[in-house]
Amino acid sequence: MAKVPRDHGDNYSPEIISARQDFVGQGRGVELKHIKNYSFDPHLTQGNVENFLGVAQIPIGCAGPLTVLGEYAQGDFVIPLATTEGTLVASYNRGMKLLNQSGGVRTTVFADQMQRAPVFTFESAREARAFAHFIEEHFDKIKEIADSTSRVGRLKSIERYHASKFLYLRFNYTTGDAAGQNMVGKATYAACLWIVEQNPSIRHYFLESNFATDKKGSMVNTMMTRGKRVTAEAVIPRKILIDHMRTDPETLDLHFRVANIGGFLSGVNNNGAHSVNGITAMFIATGQDVANVAESTAGILCVEITPEKDLYISITIPSLIVASYGGGTGLATQRECLEMIGCYGRDKVYKLAEIIAGVVLAGELSLGSAISSQDWVSSHERYGRNR
Image (cartoon, rainbow, N blue to C red; front, side):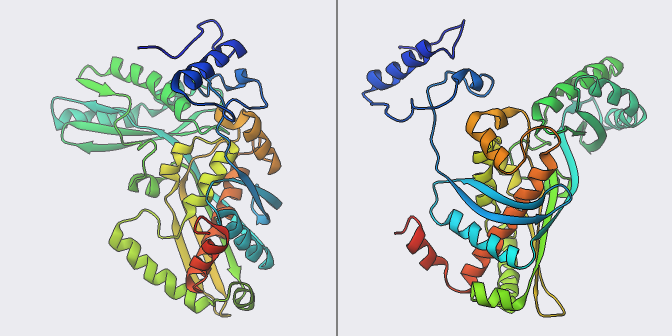
């Protein structure tokens, strides 16, 4: 069987890329017209992709500007959204307009931590219990070892969970402007080597036990936070909602309560409408690890009618995993999208999290209003894939 061409000296050179394109194109009877057209040096993708062949060109639309009243994001931002779903940009743009007319969206980053979760096995539950005490008593030493592996990663705490003769640990870190999964894996591995040396009662351990729930939605992350825990909230004046969305606070409040029960019955991890749409479109545009959408889909929507008969609405994203530095954020088009919103580089990750939360709230308002006013299908007929 023929193998994909590789060059162990320089696997990102024009020659080897051309050889792979020929292998895929001519060898498979496919003419590559668009995949092989790109505007950057392929060497920039080293560390992001292997056997570089070309690019997938995903349309990017812009919505906004969106007025964000955050602690880190302050001002008006034009939002890049990469998507193939018609109506998405138009819907988010509509929600942003509503937020702007209501004075903007207020955002708050509440917590920040990234996990690695090793598990240790013992002969009995009592040995597991003794080990839990050891972890508590030696936290400072464990932290010293873990922190020594990174310039920015810092161990905050270690949660301990027991079942049978197993002890599951959740190492919680801050990771600077990086998403940090690899960073915390390296730090926890170093800590585990020392822990094993000190505890001959350990029969075995695995660096990851599935308790960090990498790239999977989970209740533990909804409760305890993975990535950034961020809230976006706004008060929409009654008249503005009626004039621009053809619905009213009472109808949206009723829809929220009915949908809340529907979400409970179906077992979803998000009682809102579609926060993952905006998150995914921004992830693709800004070079985030798109698989982290699995965790970032969790959302807690809250709707109230104020004493003035206006609409209060908020959404909390408890596990938003984003980066403003490292990973795919330095790639050519992804960096440009981050620069559009002033979020590329160090000390920008909280700003990015606040902007994404504001975008998500705009989408919740827009789709919730469309469903409540019976505009949902007609909007897709006009702009989307139904046309």
